[in-house]
Length: 302
Image 1 (cartoon, one colour):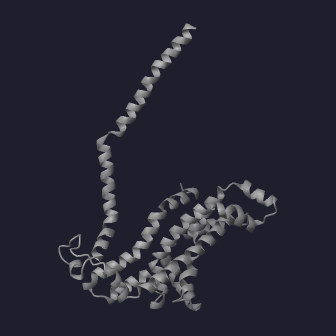
Image 2: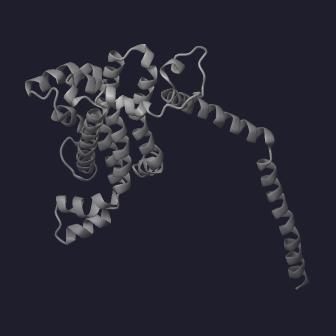
Image 3: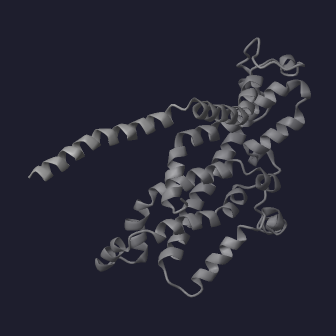
């Protein structure tokens, strides 16, 4: 009995000491000023490097024509010219350019999400001859740069009379190997018991995909949709080789047209037009960045 009480008392005396040493070590690690200052310094420098050019573009777009070209340059404008953003739409049809960009980006994104989901489900769940070989070939196609295939692609689109058209801007962009890979990784880790239960109830492949699998892949679909929208919005090279008519020009092509038609004295309007092209994508990314990370992690790219 005495031995038991002695052991209990010894354990009681050791617990406060053990807890104190753990807290002291944690508190000591958290209060290192060199580590804290160094971490914040790196974050401040990285923020300045990435956000600095964008801030300079916004501030330059609010200057007058002469103040935008003054040397040495000034950061803040003396007089804020908010009317520069209105003048951009007067000197170039940026309303039409915006509409074309929205149609092209949204149409391509919807097509990529739908086809990638079906392809990823087929590679992950269906069993057919050559499934792994075809998937490896598709992954290898990611290594081929677009500059290698754009000449035959333009020739094919010219044969279909799809140059300077919405179908030429949208349809060739619909297949996405990265999207198929992302969905395949998600569906490969999807619990098969849910599909088995639906199969017992008489659901076919398409029914199981639409009613069971697709609703549970909304996080992956949302993340891929955001990435695809940003890519399609900024896909300048493809748009440049497909479109030459002002009727189907996107915002990116409109910037090139605006730069070629305006003189160097209107550099502030060029910065305003560039800000108009960047701001929508930036807003989408800042709002849905957590959705992107969550969807990619669920897709298996941890």
